Length: 469
Image (cartoon, rainbow, N blue to C red; front, side):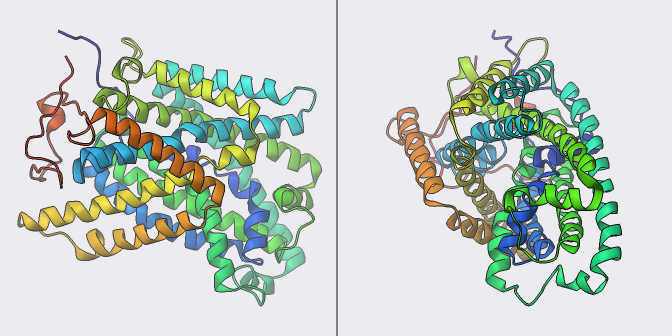
């Protein structure tokens, strides 16, 4: 009898889940990339963020539906293998790994770069090591400690952003005037193409709302908490992005800056002085650390579920610490990958992540459509708008976002998929067998209340789930 634990444990409520998702998204990013969004949109940053929020909500609704039907930490990997095919599920998980594995690297690298700028006496590599070690230690101890850290840091970031909002509003009334309010959303230089291009960039700020679905096995009443948490994360993050970008755009009308990359710091300096800008920047960095903790936690859980199923080597990835019930090995592996950022530029690191994220988003929308079609065939009707029209629109938006990626990101993404296909061919004996899966017990195999059992589309009738131990 194998007594290796196979389920994570936690008691996270809705507030903790939303705090995790918002921390993952790092709300202070709206300040960091304000100049890029404003310049691309020709001075209409809040409109770009509003469109991006609506676009991400489409996929958020699909994630919420799937999280209710399949309350597992595997996210799109689990949804695709259940609703489409085990092999498609494997490739979905493999694609998301490209995002999840290297997003921690980007987060750690950003922290090191900005801390080095503010405190140049400490070298960049030292800041990188400090952030990786601290985040790894927190995630090894467990999700409850990570939750407490995220809440404290998120409160600090929220407070800093509120102060910035008040200062921007005060400056706007005193200098820009109420006439400039409308110009912040649309002006003579703005065009539809400029807004959509900026919205495509702004959508990257939402990467991470899907990570909420990886907490399904550690949340109270996951079939209610996780779907609500996903939608609230998008809405809360979107509200922060729209409001802050509007106030900053009102403070600085137009999209012309001496340096787009430091425009957010420039606005903070104008409305509050250099001391405020420096303090605000430091608090934003603390929020960035909370994002590092959340990103590492969610990635380790996706790797664990794939390892538990045998899609990744189970002795390495599919194990939990007996007492802590955390995927310690996975957490450490992600920390080591984070340290590799010492040898990469920020541009090289960020090019790894977007392809996998938007491909995974597309597949989640497809899964909702597949689920609805199966349900309709069995006699149970779902809303055409909610289960067909909106997911199709979400998939179309995500495919559009993929087309907006640069050639480097596309080449890396396709190369990563090619490696996954080769590994899948090995696992499935030339694609003749389903990808490995593990059924934990009868309770784990039960679908959501009121959901009839079903066989995934395109799965061979001879499929026999593999059971561990």
